[in-house]
Length: 213
Image 1 (cartoon, rainbow, N blue to C red):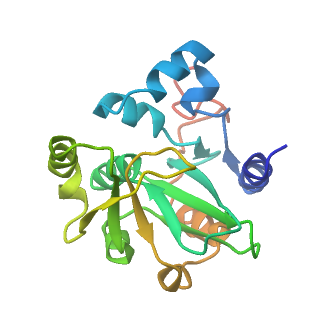
Image 2: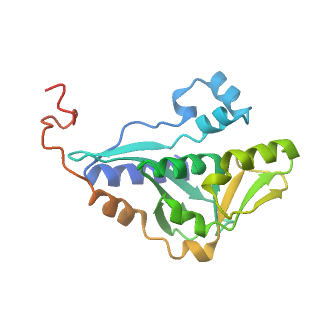
Image 3: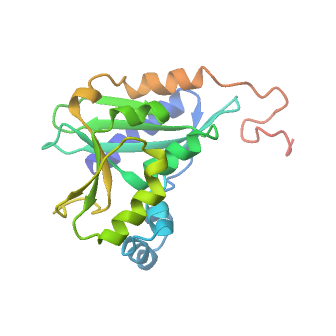
């Protein structure tokens, strides 16, 4: 089991023990076959980046009207800052304006620290910059800024040498000194759960609409 798989297992187990229902993985490389995964991974059009950026998990509270996308991230031993893929974070930020919830749970493999954050407009203030791979043309970079800048007001977009590791897609950087103020991810989920409204008309725990009862 990889370090990421272990952390995902830990997060899912905690959520399920805390009253959340967590279905199977939603990531594209888990639900598509290998040929389709390669096809989606080879493209940087908005739809492909959106599909690649699908949240790791969906969770909903067992007895309440609350669902949440769950992003589970591990940070390598060489890094103290947090790099987050730009395109999916943009989508999470825009959906948050409609009331959609997304929580990131993060574990640093170097020192073992863990934290989390709920995606909302305030998160943008913690972002140092958005980085775009050098291989992206000026036109591609201009399009990216046009597509996403509304979600990142005041964030500077900067060219960066193409990485030797990672996805090779644009990302935003949240520096270590900002991460120090983030709470443990368990507490973030707990506070979110406390905002949930009950479903008095639902009778069956797996059908919270009550339609199937």
